[in-house]
Length: 369
Image (cartoon, rainbow, N blue to C red):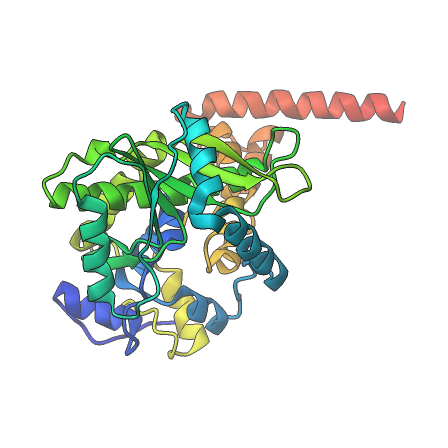
């Protein structure tokens, strides 16, 4: 199929042509956090940079996204959050102070910065409250924060609490997944850490813009979850310095939209109103970097998985890296059996594959015997 679209030149024109008539989709902490999960994927970077509605796009090409919280999980999470924040956050303050190893204040001010629909008003109230001078204990609920993503100002409306103790801020994330025998689901903790890093970065940017020390926002995040199978809350401390570095690097990459677009064919479109065959063909002109963990965080993951059939990347990045970057499964099998001679740069990987094939053959022969 030959694709043909009108030629556009400026960055703004190209982004508008990519997403079609729809306005750019706003990012949130979840979408920003997902950017760090697969920073080498050009397809996602271009689509997110253009503000494409990837859910509508995935639906249009026949591979709808299949992730998201159930209604029950959302209800349970809301109930647990309300319990932890009850009585002006008294229990939350105690948990945070004990986890940070500081004396529990007798009381702390509680400021709910949510509720109003007027974004400029909420933004100004959040800025004024969070950057006001003071060292007394304070809790700030639902602050409206912001980040620049691909040239757009993104408003973040988190359900988190910013806790100020001794003049230093800590992001507090309240999650409903349990901590059982001192251990939580590693994947859920990792996701919470990345999302928390988004909020830390947004808070630091706010402080820097106001001439305040951004390092007064700690890289240690307090994660509050239910303990075992009860609703008794327990607090844990997570160091998000690594996540902050990855996040900043990816945001800087997306800020260079002109660089990203140089690798995109002229006239590329991801307009969900276009014909499905046209969209699928267009998407395949921009390289993706599919991995199984994309299924948990990218709306186009099922399309990319179908496209990646027969590629080693579909087995996971560790597998592809262990194979020396060999892209095709057929090539791996040919090298393992000796049917294909390896290039000099792949000879080491080929030798390991041949050894693995011999071990497998010996094991199967012993099993049959």
